[in-house]
Length: 511
Image (cartoon, rainbow, N blue to C red; front, side):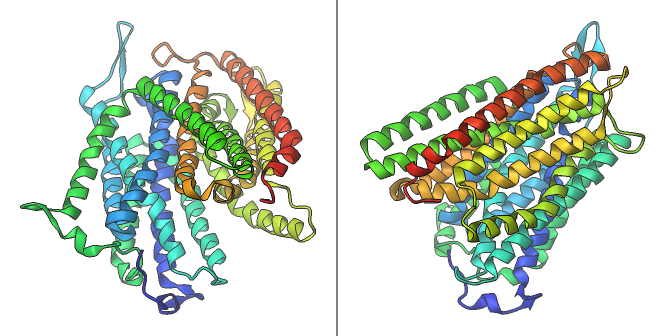
């Protein structure tokens, strides 16, 4: 992708190109809108539309799986045709439409003669809004971080610091959004919380457009002249891409309402990926390549379990918080999701320093070890909740300190697995299929999101039109599942740790 040679030294602010801060604020507001909406979504589904926990979990899982899958397609379109800046602008426009569409909530569902009655028009507006957000994220998410990398030469010592600043923007946006949108949405009305998320996305779009002069020469189309070629008398290639992108919203609108069918498709796709990778490793690779590919497959499968459990934050854990955590008078259930970005901001520098320090002394854990530690920590987080639940009073309420400790453990697990995932794929994948394996890695998050929705559904406790169980009975359901999740995750984490040396040897020199 074309960039202006030497432009990274012009127009600096605080020692970095001004374009970095344009991207910082754009991504901060985009994440504000995304996490602000996510904080409210499961509560909105169960309280406004009276979906049962199982159906709400499937909707969230389907939404999450499509959100994680679409950037693979959006990135390819930007790479080959649009360029990153145009893709980001188009994605941001779609996101604004989607987030403001969420503010049109319509009348709440009612229970009439044992049947739940939902307004069909507003229900379809809701699904259409989710579709706009899914496609919008697809065009924006991967491409904006790519431009950050383009601002610097590969050997520029400021490069790592730039990504640290950029990711800080992501977590600031997530932290503020879950507090602000969560409180406003739960306290006043859902539409105000969703509307605030929409305002955040609009702010991100305006920041990007008003300051685009600082990004001239970056994220340009690979062949700009081709975009102006006429495919039809009134339709250039660029306009055709926008048209297809807009029309794809209506395709996703249909897919997201078919949660079961989407799960079947993901299941077949996941099975096909595993079988193809094994076939390729055995019949098309030399012994070293084969070992590395199989290790990559094992670690990718491990990450699917980790993220499926981690994603409970937006579904079952929020419902658990709402029903069984003593929050006091001011704090709302959705606001607890702010703990993850808060812990990321406070602990990420410590972990970065720790890995460097251990590396210099020769004690840095290997990649398989980090994956095993991550699984153990997410499991320990659920174990902490089980212990906290055992101390609950007759009202079935758990002290919020146990929930905070769970989020802390989940975040430390994330800091073990998240930074090394992409690096693991680039190091272990055979060069001739590296791009495909990178796509598989991103799609594994899609599988994890859907699996997370299925797991959340196992804790369904209000399948009778919104009439939830009394708190002690609900607590028993959550505790039983949390206990199983803890045992499975900790157990598999121990297995990965025991196999870490074996897996490391099969990586043949890759750390």
